[in-house]
Length: 250
Ligand SMILES: C[S@@+](CC[C@H](N)C(=O)[O-])C[C@H]1O[C@@H](n2cnc3c(N)ncnc32)[C@H](O)[C@@H]1O
Image (cartoon, rainbow, N blue to C red; front, side):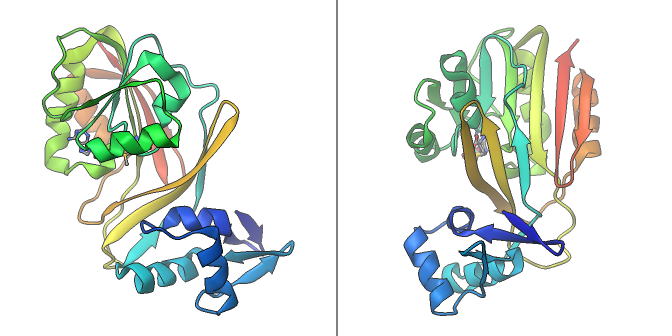
């Protein structure tokens, strides 16, 4: 990502990650050269604004999409203790990539867990499981994480998932949550998505997380839910497009 005169531009690699279909560096370069994607050369490399990328995705994938401003998260110093359960741990498998064999990653979809293996999460124990019905004994995990996973879950299911997480955590265990702020869908787009770069030890993961834009969620919503279920709020951090919460089981 580059910024020129307060306008942010994505490079080719970042644009590839914003497509769901199989675009490549070569195909994106071709869109620039055939003027299907409005481009700007910065330091000799093609770049495009998020609005132009949104337009191309609408044409190519036939789906209307709105991106947040691109975000960066540095996880190099995040403290995650002992035995970790990662909710919705497919996709990039970020927590698995970070903490390896200390992680049990659960996901509804087998294909997402296979994808996370390919993305570099080779060591976590991957299990197909619904977060609404965790099959672990109570007091099993020191830490539970949800890294941009609850944005994929209907709001009606969040309370049940919080209750399940509370049960499988040990006393004083922590639930650590990163998620997208989803505003009201005034743009009438089908998908709302965040382009994101995640720094873990020795690696930068470039990706995007997008969900059906048929709901709203924000930090206050999850704080209310956490308190209702019995968690104590240890840390709350509001960033530009997402939030971070560290919750403790009392
Ligand atoms: C795309 S991932 C989020 C990013 C992921 N944590 C990472 O590290 O890249 C969100 C996942 O949540 C999963 N999911 C949605 N509802 C779920 C549920 N009820 N139980 C378990 N996983 C669920 C989806 O299948 C999806 O793979």
